Image (tube, rainbow, N blue to C red; front, top):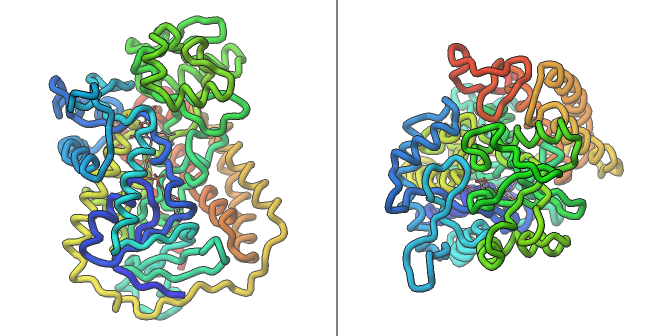
Length: 541
Ligand code: FAD
Ligand code: SIN
């Protein structure tokens, strides 16, 4: 089946939904999303969204904090633009129905809180389930809009580009690198549909599932980065994987985060013997930036051989803790941990991808008509390390920029430029009955990334990882073309590509900066490495 539309948006998190709401008055919008629409990282965000909203705060302070976290690699113009646009975007979220927590029932002012790396209280939040409140409000708006169509349980397989058609000998080289939609698998009936679009937007979120331990939901398999790379787009800074210091350590808890806001509210990290250790690592102690705290915990665990460290908030008033962190309180209690009476066992886990599809200030990739927004993009805001709660902010600001740009240029674009997109070619494939190969490779990639390309890296570990991933990729390649595509196989192919790109980027950067730490190069090298790590797929003729 072929669908012809104006805007194809892949992903239904904060980035994709905000973009959709902004362009719906200009054309037909299709949101393709691989599970239920609500299943996004956005939905699990806890801490909140950073913006200059407080009386004593200033744009300059937020800019300084963002630049300090980014460790030399932020693009200053992007940082300035995002931070200055923040308050307008927060007001817009509120107009769309997002109910942020107020200071009190009879006070209209937002309750702004502190997180690591911020010099001011500037995190707007909705309890400790900010993401759920945002996702729900945006989904409600989008579902009510007659110009927006939802395709749930549809997973994008690959982008359709001119160069792809050129390989089949139908267009000339002059048209290379223009995106005209995507092939999308309906996971309900196994059919691959063609979505032809004037504008295609990747809003596919993060890459946490590339690692064995992650705070991310299952959808975070880096599909947007992998698809864009295969389509010939530039990708950048993929070595900068943020590990959140405090994910709940419990055999029955899958991917549950203990928000940084708990440390913002006075929570203290201690080891199994009750010793505070962050003062050994940074003058900001428990409120140091995430890279510092995650490395400190990693070091403590390696020294002690313990399974976890602990986050202690028991010294705070029990009623206040329960009121401020109802989600965390309930979740921990359901696992037998009363956070008002005992410390919470925590470990670091892969949380956020600072790199991604390289885009300009309007969210455009270097493939024409292809935008990337939200976590899948590399805008230059985060540099070598993201400041807490700057991600939701970046997503709404870039959705706004990209939508404004795309609308302004829509008129000039028609679908005539790609009149005959060939339907997906199943190439005589049969159903695979060897799902075990897929799950084995999934597991192997996630383990090798955790062991060799984690919080602390070394040349030897990176080389080992490179050799392994090349073999796995070869296997996946053969498997991919021999069997019918399934969601698991599509995601496996994507996590393999993203893992390979992370390894390549980490191997190229011969220094330690921000989130990237290599034992052989423990220092920053501004002379050679004050630059992005940029990769493009080699041309296959
Ligand atoms: P997502 O919200 O992840 O949405 C991605 C969408 O793309 C999903 O709908 C998914 O199904 C879809 N998709 C992916 N691949 C495909 C495909 N091939 N085909 C079709 N659909 C596809 N940031 C903050 O700023 N503040 C916080 O407090 C905060 N807390 C967090 C807590 C947790 C537990 C996590 C995991 C992250 C947190 N973050 C936080 C980070 C932030 O939530 C994410 O970076 C942000 O929500 C990403 O939004 P997005 O729209 O780019 O992607
Ligand atoms: C958290 O609540 O700790 C997550 C905040 C973020 O990822 O920005």
